[in-house]
Every structure is written in C-alpha cells, then in structure tokens.
Length: 184
Image (cartoon, rainbow, N blue to C red):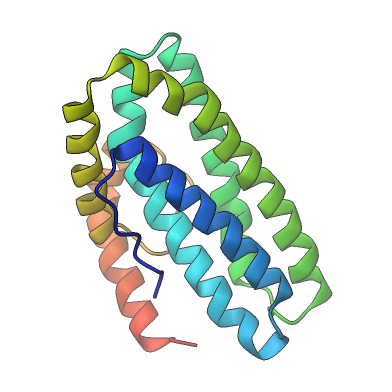
C-alpha cells in the first residue's frame, strides 16, 4: 500500500510532498533487488494513479479556470499524463526483473519528473497566487478524499474530470479487487 502523506498544509504543499515521494519511489524501485522490486513498483504505481486522478478531478479544472493561460497549461499536462499512463500500463505487463523493465522505468521516471516540474512551475505557483489560503486548504481536503476513492492503476484515456467521474468509481472498484488478489 502506498505510504500516506499526512499534512496540514495546503493543496500545493500536499502535491509537492507527493511529487517528492514519487521521486523517492522511482529511485527505490530502480535500486531494489529483483525480489523486492515488484512491491516497490506496486507502491509507485498506486501513488501515481491516485495522485494523477485527484489532480485531474480537482486541481486541473480549478487551474484551467483561475490561472493565466489555464486551458493551454492544463491541456499540456493532461497530454503528459496520458502518455505516462500508457507507459505505466505497459510496465505492468513486463517482468520487473527484466532489463526491459529497467529501461522503461527510467524513461517513465524522466517523463513523470518532467511533468511534475511543469506542474510545479506553471500550475502550482499560479494557484498559490490566484487562490487564497482557505481555498488551497479546502482543495487539499478534497484531493485527499478523491485519492481515497481513486483507481489504483493507470487508465489511459481517462484524463478529464468528467471521464474520471464517469469511469473512476467502477475502475477503482476493479483495481482495488485486483490489488487484494495480487498483493506482491
């Protein structure tokens, strides 16, 4: 199970903490012994899935409305998220001890960390400027709630708030059942 990040901070700080945990999990997954790599990868996959779902449902729609050039910035982030979901889904089907897994994990890491940097510099900074502290704190609570019910596996093509609301509950139920059956 993914490590839960407890924080009383606002949504930006909460997401930045998750970005740091994602960076750490990429490093831990890559460095893990083959017999431990699957467990680290499952934790990474789960955190990426719930994190992106919450951003797609809560953060991106708000950013689209309130930040300068919000539509363009969010559309670019959604495109990056879709590509990452495809890569993550592909990684799920590869043996974690194979050289192919290591190569594709490194490519995914580079793409995800680039994406996180783009969010941090283009989206999160502007949210801090455009929204007051109470809005940012309220958004954190909503993001945490969204993550509790989010799918735990990648679902490429489901990057909008509407698509997540439509497909998300069913996908989440199936993912959580698969997780329970296939715990590493």
